[in-house]
Structure formats: C-alpha cells, structure tokens
Amino acid sequence: MALSAPKKTQKMAGGGLLSLGVVAAVAILQGGLVMTSSGYARPARAGQGAGDLAKIADVANCRVVGMALQSVTGGAADGAVTVEVEEGTYLLKNSAGVDAITVADIDGYCFVVDDETVASNSASGTRPRAGIVREVGSDGVWVEISAAASAAAPRSVFLPWTINETDTLAGTSAELVAPGSGRIARNTVIVQKAVTTGGDVTVAVGVTAVAGLACAVADAAAKGTVITDTPTAGDASTIVAAGDRIQIIPAAAFATAGAVSGILEIILK
Image (cartoon, rainbow, N blue to C red; front, side, top):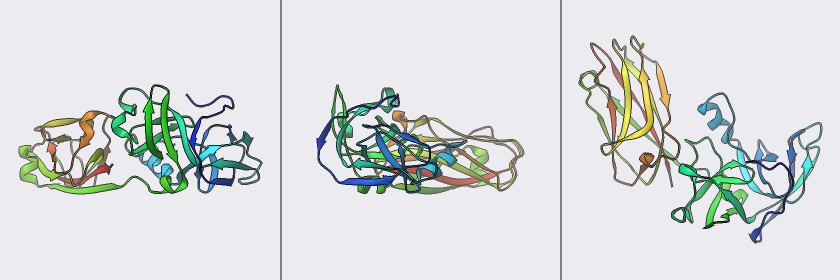
C-alpha cells in the first residue's frame, strides 16, 4: 500500500544527497521512495497508461533516485518546489505471491510497486527498477538505491522468429535458444501472409507453456496485423536460463492459408 502519511524509513548505509524539482501539485512524503519523471521528482510508482505498451513507454522516462528526506507538495509549475532526496540502502516493504523477493534475488534488481514497496519482477517491463537487493528478512527488503543503479535499465534481448505457411498450418513450432538467464516478458506476432482460419500463438520453455502468454490471431487476419501479449507476471513458467529451449507454437486451429513471424522479448537478470 502506498504511503498515506510521513514516516521514518530505516536506512542501512550512506549515499549522495540530491535536490530535485518536484512535479507540479504532486505530494511527496518523507520516507517515500522518489523517482524522476522526465527530470522532475515524484513518488515512485509503476508505469501508467491505457495498456502495457503505454506503461512501458512511461517507465522509460522514470528513474528511481533515493528516499525523500522531507514531505513537500509541488507548486503551480514543475520545479517550482524542490525536495531533498538521499541515495543509500533502505528497508522497504516486500511484495507477496509471485512478486515476493526472496534470498535468491540478493544482488539482483528489484522493481517499484509504489513508494514503499518493491517486487521481484518488472511485470513485463511496466515497473521501473528500484535498486539492488542487499538483504531479505521478515521485516522487509534492504535495497541499495541510487540514480546510477536505476539508470542501468533492465537489459532486454529480442529474439526474432518466423513460421512459414507450411509450418503454421501444421502447428510446427519455431525453435529458439535463450541467450541468457531472465524472464520472458512479451511475444509480438505479425501476420506475414493473410490468415484464413486463425488461432493462438503460444510460447513454451522446453515443453512447459508460459502461463498467460497467447497471441490470438483472428480469422481473416490481414497481412501486417500485429498482436502482442504478456505472460502472467512473476509466474515461474516465465523464467529461462541460458541455453534453454524456447518454442513458439502455432495452434492446430490454423487452416487453409497464413504465415506469421514476430519477436520474443526476454528481460535478462
């Protein structure tokens, strides 16, 4: 849950002090995680927008920079009011379920849920990077937060694939190899040849289907039609290791005519 009042957030180690202009009319609370959005400070949050692509674009403009040392409210214009923000290693709230951070995540990156909570995954690129996990305990997660750590955005690799008409109609998968360890974040399909009877294009790591990831190609989909989908955030089926086999699988429902290609995105650890 996001902060509703100022608080004192426990700190493990020292860091740099920043003075940043605040987004107009936005309230930042002492002890809350701060990020910059197009250069101005605001409470840290996940990406915003009408869909995942808009949220990912929003996150691209955000950098988590530290902890607020005071409570302030932005003025009538961006930058009219400033806030003091300090880098360092701070105790933040852990998420639950598939988003929970564990000791296996130590020395890896965690991601923003809100201005006091972090998660183990980026929710398919829709959460900004919070910092580096240093300790995990029953009281929360110690996270090293700095502008430098945040600026090193999660590295994505994009694996192109193609399924010709013969293989599309036969339900024959395209075969890929994971180039590194990480999580499958998105599959995007484009119709290369107009489809008569469509179906789902799914993804599997080895022979295990990636949960929630199915690009539905409609009947009579025209050449150039683009379909994109993301998996169930944080699900174990999204995890890949370097060298893992990945299948892009057209459903047996495809019939008569059609070919597809696309790009699979993997966010590397």
